[in-house]
Length: 533
Image (cartoon, rainbow, N blue to C red; front, side, top):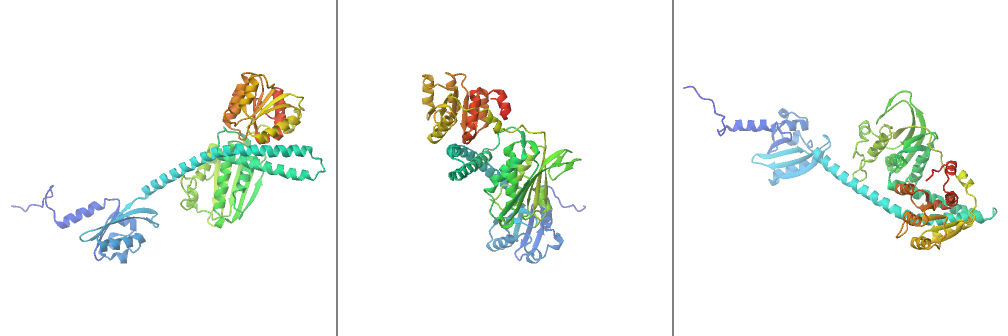
């Protein structure tokens, strides 16, 4: 009878050599790298994934000593952990980043009868997911902190603006009373300058902390950039030399002012943090440019038209081409862990894209970096408020009955004195409830109501609505430390209500009162640049 071939049906026995071959062939399909080491560190087997990971062919490895063929190739820690696993005859598990491959590996070393089996699992994607989750959690915490900061800033601004209103108001009245040659005038002018500066700082902090809730509108970019730089100066290290070159007075763009400020602050902060040891030169510029043909930049393309070019240049470390290509990716950062989220430039990109602009980046290692943001220029903006025209309509008061309500006694005394000096008959209340009671009982003749917005028990809008139940046509001026969109919308709906930034009471309250007593005539508003309410 003819000799039968060996059976390979399920359950049939297989020669040891055939079994090893089948296992080896199967391991070549595994995507994780595998190596089998004998007790004497001779390499007995490697799979295809191991060949790819090390860049070595198995023919050059099998039968050779590991320490002579692959020392350090799989990472310094592997050398330590593999020796420990071989000597202790216990499994070892650890994670290590391989700089040569730019990958994370989970390494598992298992002692076996013949020696040691080591499995290298590529966990780079898992690590990336973990880092992304951590970054998202950190971003959420930062967002929550910013929301808390906005709430805190609003409360602090209310108290601080009351103090500023009193300081600026009394300083202004003193300057009006002091003779021209008085030596005290210089001191009062310094007090007023300091108060003006404090007022600007508070408004900038509020605008940045509260973020943007405004619709896009036409704005001149130069004042927005100047405000941003003013806020930047307070945080810039003394070792950074800042130079500014702002032109482009005709650069009017349809923008959100708070987002423009965020772009400037993010770019400038990144710039000085890229300087070695925080020492260097930061240059900010703004000018108008015109493109005759479509242009493509690092991020985005622009059509042939006029643009405002905002540039931020530093003489810091600079970046390689590979880094520059990834700059605007979310969570990409070159900063040490814990010192950056990788979201700043991603946010800048989103803002510029939403405004129809583009960003160009020029950088090289050791030669600094230049960011240039291009925003499309539109027609002229609305005319600014003409305070001179406003003052021309403010004739001196003739004893008109004005009621003023504010729970802060310092501001109450200052505004009462200011209005009396302007010729008005003023009744001042520290409590909205007391004011409302006198109005309802007919004890408070009123031609104009001026009230603070933030008061305990009843805010200014609620008081105005309650007063109008008795005096439906009385005009109202509401003063507040922060003019929010909700307040202005509510004032518009109510009609005959003007909103004034409280710390500008000395400069504008008397003039605005004159307009209010005339029923906010539209022609007067058009003369001054205000809009009728």
